[in-house]
Image 1 (tube, rainbow, N blue to C red):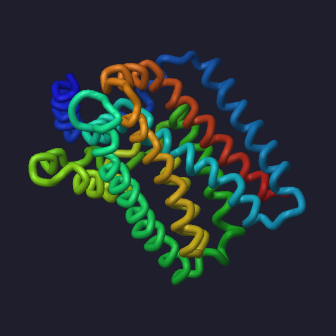
Image 2: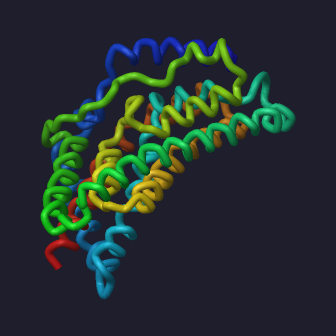
Image 3: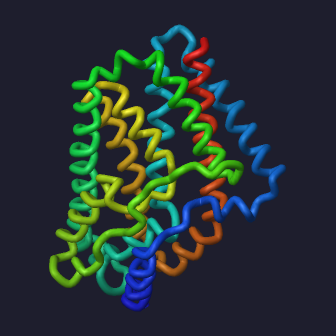
Length: 282
């Protein structure tokens, strides 16, 4: 059963190489009133969070408190979908479920985690260094309002009110690696590839929020740190493979809730954008 489902997932990904729709298609399943209410709720939550965390602290500290949870949520949402999970389900333990199978699979889990960490070091380090060399941190007064508007715009995109450019490499990890390497090596390669984030499709524009924060922070440490948080969210769904749950059951559950995840994504983006704007204004 597991082998058959992995073959199906492989075929599914081959189809995805041709193109992947973003979350706009899910917005059609919600009424305009419901989407507007969710957008308004996100805006109110963002203002409230900014006023709570931004009182009596430096704006950089307040931004940290606000963006780190958003980064984690973005990472989780990027893999917490049938599309995202179908790549990591190929790394599940061999054979039928047992404690021995899970124990033998643990090196794959660890290697996958390390791969995500390496991806964060490379991408975050490059963005932080670039921001530092260009002195982007000193332009925060000019970049914050633009950053806030873009976050809200992408939130409106996810909620179906706007159409914003969403450039992505619309494909997933190379699945022919399964025939060429041991599973733990594949786990490392997949983790590194997914951890670089721009080599594969990522369903949430929260990736752009993390990228912008990393670049304009002008800090290598902050940039690596926020991508480590984002990639931790991306990694955690692999832990489901340690449980006695079938790929079919997990993917079906995710498919039934994918539109809710896309709407939550939009609300988080709007909340983050209004929070950043509130911090800038107060």
